[in-house]
Length: 282
Picture (cartoon, rainbow, N blue to C red):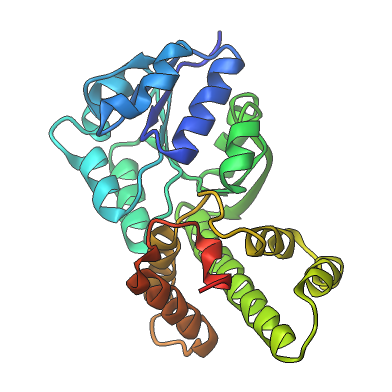
């Protein structure tokens, strides 16, 4: 029997996974704080719930994909929240990028209720979400993870398992810190090239070849555009970098702190809702 899926939060990533579940024949229930933003999914066959509670009741596997600790706490803990609609027959997943503190607190609350819970943040951006080619970064019960493989294959190309609940979130914050550093470094490299009198049109493709990598390709493509299309905003990466600094605690990570400062500066200059790659340009 095909599992019923609920997606709580239909932004870029939530909409992408919901659409792919629908394409693969899964019954999908969605909830979004602004219901109108889910209309495209309703046109594709999704059912709209009037609360996270109702969406959870209607599903076997529930994905929460909201923006921050605050929005996540609201949809999990509210009077009509996910936990009020959950029972032991359901699998609960947060695919948002959150603090490790909140993720572990949520995992503990689920454990107290004997509920199956995974933290499963996603990477790959809009393109991978829309293509069903995400990489999932997983924390939780490894034995139970195997039962989810048929469902996860509808939205992802890879899953990396890191350990108990909270481990996937730890890795996501580390990953985003490194990726953000790469973007900032690319922008500085291009400014240095310009200062040295080299042509950007020659430097960019050469950097794509060496050191290469997906982020270099993304950075170069964005560098050539006055307004890169939104895949992941400056506001979102700034939030994630702040969460990573909280995870770091007393560890001295001067480079990551400087990168957070660069994104905060870009945010303060009015680019918070622009794509994160604008840090290369401004």
